[in-house]
Length: 163
Figure 1 (tube, rainbow, N blue to C red):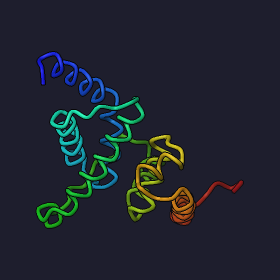
Figure 2: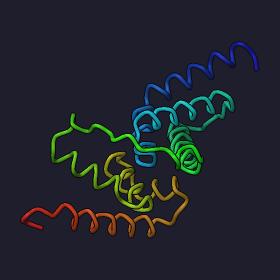
Figure 3: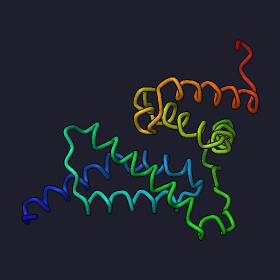
Figure 4: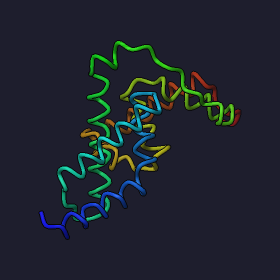
């Protein structure tokens, strides 16, 4: 790789980090439920980007790759022995309004098969088709998981009077 190629790669990675770091950290947080661990995962993803230097046709391809890498790295961390055997540190969510704090706690308490689609749909703003592609599932499966996850949340949180 030439010096010019390395500069271009560094610029792409820096731009992607500025643009996507927060979203990727929130996604990793839905898996590991610890801010510091989620930030470490995002760092690992961007290091992988620097090491492999993949080329993308468009920004959406880059974003999809980053999301997929974040999901895979998060799963790897969850499987690690050191992660499973440690005592969890409670996250301080007091900076959120009480209503949001409760909702986020309940979303994070969901099984991963419901938590991830709900997070990507409501917090990430992705369409069902995109979520299906990220997670390697059928669109109908993602739609069903969203509906079931919403039902579970509705039972736990209650609904609005007009529902």
